[in-house]
Picture 1 (spheres, rainbow, N blue to C red):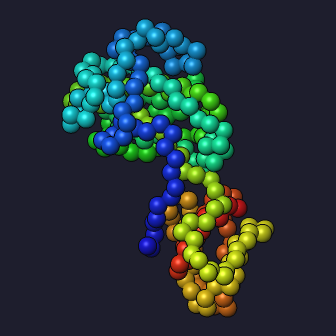
Picture 2 (cartoon, helix red, strand yellow):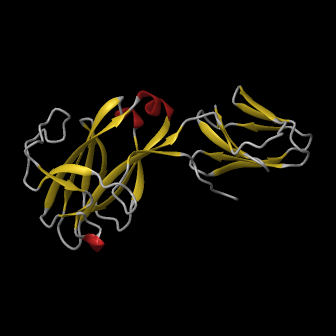
Picture 3 (cartoon, rainbow, N blue to C red):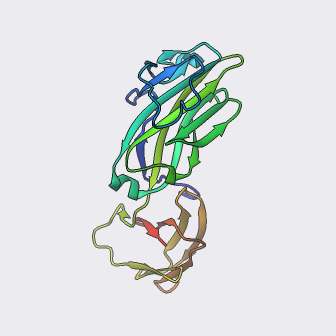
Length: 232
């Protein structure tokens, strides 16, 4: 491992990709009323279908061949999961332009199209405890077409990953300085951002090492025998 490694993810609303449970949405192919994306909107008169919607690469579970589609769904987020979120992302495949609304607010707009699922960060404060409403518009002008949207988050935690029995090192953060003590002399230590970018590396020349943390947030630290998650 040199420049990236996995971070813990929480699937909030799994996308309807192969291997996942298929998500049910309410949808319409007609232009709806102006408040179609709002939590208070009554979509009981819309049709119901499983995502993805479209025709692209036979990924669809509901066929959509017109020039527009509007889809809505709800999902539940409990207080504990919301408190543990560090960042939140849409996991989507869109063809073509799409507008994604979360709890009455436009959370993402993308133009054009993509041919595989991609992640896009959004403001996690748009999520709320309890029931959340996700509403999406997608349009089509030519070629293949598809729309599916899921949500996941990365977790905020100070728990240790991959603990090792008998470890005797300790660590703490004070004034934006991470100190790790009682390491094996000359052992390698690497500091990563939560999304896996290598920020700093060094060796414990006297069994201790100090890293100045560049910002407030969550960091991952790779030791020779363990991975730590650190909150500043």
